[in-house]
Amino acid sequence: MKLKNLTLTFVGVSMAVFAVPQVARAVSLSVIADGLDNPRNFAFAPDGSIYLTTSGKGGDGADGRCIASPSAQYIPLCAASNGSLLKIAPDGTKTAILPNLTSIALTPSGEQAAGPADFKFDSQGNAYLLTGLAGNPAERDTTLKAPDLGKLYKVDLVTQALTPLADFGAYELANNADGTDLISNPYAFAIKGNNAYVVDGGANTIYQVGLDGSGIKTAKAFPQEVLSLTTDQFPKLPEGTVDPTGGAELPPGYTQAANGLPVSNQSVPTGITLAPDGSLTVSEYTYFPYPEGAARLWQVDDNLTTTGIGVNNTQLTGTEIATGFTQLTGVAYDPEGNLYALQHINSSEWKEIQQGGVITGDISGSIIKIAKDGTRETIWSGNGLEAASGLEYYNGSLYTSNRARLAGTGQLLKIDLKGGSEGRKVPEPATIAGLVAFSALATRLRKRKQQEELGEELLAKVETL
Image (cartoon, rainbow, N blue to C red):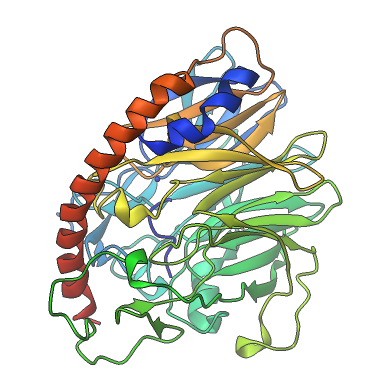
C-alpha cells in the first residue's frame, strides 16, 4: 500500500491539551526555508548546512506520463522533472545541488509527490540519495518513463553523478515481500557501518543495502496489524449502503471492516533512525482509515532476523517499543537517549484533508518525547506544525519538513528545545477554554457534512475494486 498522504488550518482541542507544557518550556519554532514543494527528509553537513530533499510537484499529464494513484481515489499521478536536492547554508542561502529530478504527484494539485525522498552522509562523508515511487513498479519504466524512481544512489556532489546501489521497485515487482498489493514507495533510510537500512512505505518492507555496491542483502516485511475498527472510525457512507464493495473480491492482504469497506492492515513504515544501543528505530503510519492511537514504534536489529513464519518466510522480527500514536512520519534521538516521534496529523487524516490537497479541517501535528524510562511529553503540537514529515536532532534543536505533502507551501522548521524568553507563546488556559468550546462545535458541524461527502467518494472508489 502506498504511503498515503505524505507523507503531509489548525484550531481546536490540541491547543488546550498542550499549551501549558509549551509555555513552561518556552520551546520556540522558526522557519528555516519556505515555499517548498513536498519537502521530505534531510541531513546536516559538518559545516551546519542542510541537504534537503524536495519531492517536487509532478506534471500536468500533457505528455501522458501518468498512472492512477493506488490510494488517492485513482487521481492521476503525473511525472515531470521538478524534484531536487537543496543545500541550505547556515545563512539561509538555498542552492539546488541536484535540480530537475523526477517527481510524480497528484494532478493538478501537486500533492503527495514522490521523488527525492531522503539524503544522508556516511561516516566517511560519502553522500547518498533515496528516491520514492508511490505506485506500481510495473508502470515506472513504461508509462511514467521514470526509471530513476524507487532507488538508492551514491552521489558525487561535485559532478552530480548518481550511481545506483539498489532498485526497490524491481525488487517489489519480483518478490512482493509482504504478499499484498504491488506498490513501492521508499521513504527514508539510515546508515550503519557499510549498510543502508531503507523503509518502504508502499512495500511495507525494510531493506538492508550494501553501500559497497553489493545491492539488496536482506528484505523483510513488517507484520500486519488487524484491528477491530468501529464504523465511527470511517467516513460516513451514504444512507442505505449495505455492501460498499458491490460484492467484489478483496485485494490480497485486505479484510472487510464493520461497515463493509476494505481495510489493508498494513504497517506502512515511514521513519528510521539509529538508537543509542545500535539498533534501528522505525515509525509507522498505519493504513486506511488511519486509526487514531494505533501507530507503533519498532526496534529492529541490524540483521533483520526472520522468524521463519510469515508471507514467503520474509516477515520481520521486531519489538514494539511503544504504541498509542497517530500517523507517525519521523523519529530521532537526542544525545541523552530521549526518543522523539513525529505525528503527521493528530487525527485520522481523512477527517482533515481530502485527497488532492483540499484542507477541510485541522492538519496540526505533534512532536512527542519518550524518555528513557518511557515517560511521554508532547513538546509541540499545532501552532505552525502541520502535516510534517522527517525528523532530525541537531545542536539542541529538532528539525522537520512542514506541510510535507503539499506543493508551494512546504517549509523546513526548527524547534529549539533549549528554551528561553524567545519561545512562542500560546493562549493561557482560561482563554483556551473558550476557544475549545467554539472550535469543537464548529468542527462537529463542518465535519458532519464533509464525512457524508467523503463517504460518497469512497463508495465510488470501492466499486471499482
